Length: 369
Image (cartoon, rainbow, N blue to C red; front, side, top):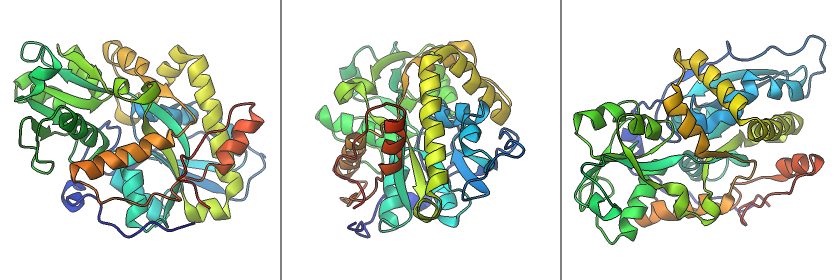
């Protein structure tokens, strides 16, 4: 494969990595928590694969429901047999990437921006994207008393989760498409982009300090529950209304040493997505139960119901959209043009999909050679 060039990624990464996030789709900086209480034990006497244990990481977030439900329902463990799962949860991307680099996790569910940054910062040596998980679940929600149409966004204060995170880049790109000007790093210009921790965005909205927010679920639905109106669903801006919000990454070292374990986790992921899509109400309840275990509080129906409907669970990593998201970050001036060749290895996923009678997925020319 051709290694990625050592390029500068987000210039403010050192600063924003310190910001904690809760229930975000993808961002930078967080602490992890051991999720062992949620992890089912391996069946006694079951045959182990090449590793005694696989350490997985994900966010306590609806866009990571493949992991939440797969662990909660024992669907991963069933495929792993006697190889046990150790699960950890993270609140944002960089700490999960750090855990992957340190060997604290082997496989993770994570958003596109941290995947791109983790890959480019390591010169293409630390991770591979090996599968898809979720698409969608991002909305522009506004105060309907202040903003009645898209053109009314000009001059208003709109929150995004964090400078340079996936939603921030998407909003900056949308602003540019309107012909408006905003300085990406300061957020100042024709629109005031206010970087706000998702867990306090609803309070900021209620206080009037922001006029709206471009945010992932369930934050978007929390704003709607506070009287906000969905002005734009980001999915409408993408071909076929699909874009990657969560994919699956693996340590290249673990992939090389334990391909059978990686394949088992991918098989569990494919079967979990199939179960979620076939049983949406049961799956929603399972995800909410997992969230309650992790956070101590389940999401109310007025939040989880609309949020769940806006997320699509898919095995396809939607590789072309990850490349487009990287181009949007470059356009905004937050990322130097990255060499993403080799970021994907979909060999094992396509093997699993063939065995399940499903269509193979494409790496958009960004696969490892």
